[in-house]
Image (cartoon, rainbow, N blue to C red):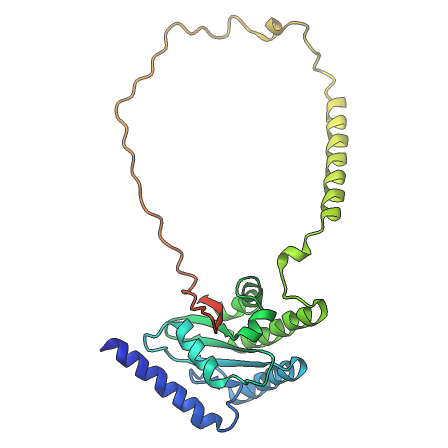
Length: 253
């Protein structure tokens, strides 16, 4: 029964999108009422600018609750409803206020340009700080800007963004050589300042025979009790609902 109610809640929302969107669904659907009319208009313009620039379709959808439906499944259903089959890629950011869930759903076209792991992680790092502070207009603006940056990277490099590409072996070697040089110089300076210490010819010189004498030693164990407690799982990330037709990822805010 609960599962049926969840499906019905999702269907009602999708029907609402179809009615309000007519021929072309809006890029911003603020069902949770987080934005003022002018903020909706500004966000709509920002998303539209990115869409025209890269021939994609980005959208932002907020709901008061997903009605028990997992955020990933909800976002995937929304994406299927509003995507443009003529674009190079489609992506929607879903925000569920009651559950404090966010989820980004992508189709296979967008998935090639913004990957499920590196791409979604880099994008979420842009808007999550503002989202956690309930600065919703700023968070959505960062979503648009972050998408622009990742799509620009793909357009320029011909491949999706990957943090590993930032690694430069030559720079690492130079940094290591400089660090070793500085360490060697500091060591020489410190050794030169140790003028009150002289090396001993025999190890016995370092021994003070009158300082301590151990006559008896014994280890006594009264008991041993080992307690194991399972670590609580990190609930900051929602379950991913990726499949053959959908990519993305999400979490809590």
